Amino acid sequence: MQIIEQTDDHAAAIERLLDLTFGPDRHHKAVYRLREGVAPAPGLSFVIENGDGLAATLRFWPVMLLDGQAALLLGPIAVRQDHAGNGYGKALMRHGIAIARAQGWPAILLVGDEPYYGKLGFSRAAAERLHLPGPVERERVLALELTQGALDGASGMVDKAAANGGQATRGAGAEPDGAT
Ligand SMILES: CC(C)(COP(=O)(O)OP(=O)(O)OC[C@H]1O[C@@H](n2cnc3c(N)ncnc32)[C@H](O)[C@@H]1OP(=O)(O)O)[C@@H](O)C(=O)NCCC(=O)NCCS
Image 1 (tube, rainbow, N blue to C red):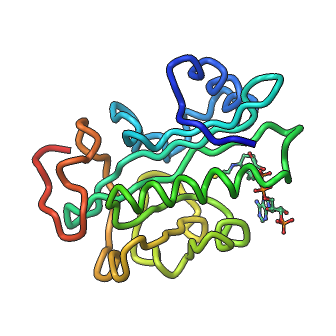
Image 2 (image 1 turned 90 degrees about the vertical axis):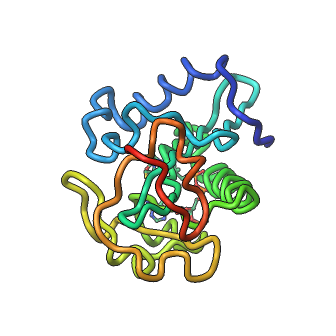
């Protein structure tokens, strides 16, 4: 199993896998509001391929916290059903988290099951005071600090990043770079 960076050639297969996994109406999910008009975080889109095509996908999107600090939103992540339970999901996330840390991102948020994502360090406690737009089950909003204390004092509604991908606002305590 090899994790590689996503290229344009993977785009159609990723859309097919996401449609299969989450349904073709997945774009109506509230969390997609945070991705609309915003590019995925650079260098943080990964796939796993095998002999018969795309087996798994993981991307991250930049978002902005109320205080102007940038963070990442993990997802969507999907593993083809015939490869479920082979460790692809965890391997993709460990890889993504390591790259995100190396890039200097302070924290990662996601919407998902704590029993699964907790194995990778995500917790409800770290996201307790953060809200995502739309109808989202509060207990499924999880976070992982990549730098200690990055989410101390972070509260309120998470917003879309600037269309530039949030680059200018990355890093703890950084100022927002204008309109979001
Ligand atoms: C969730 C998903 C990404 C996991 O990928 P995967 O490659 O099958 O998972 P891994 O092989 O890395 O990990 C499997 C382990 O996670 C556990 N697991 C998987 N989904 C879980 C969940 N929702 N809650 C708790 N545990 C879960 C398995 O029981 C297994 O446990 P073990 O390691 O103790 O045996 C994949 O099943 C998937 O695409 N599911 C549908 C889409 C989805 O739910 N995406 C996440 C929405 S945010």
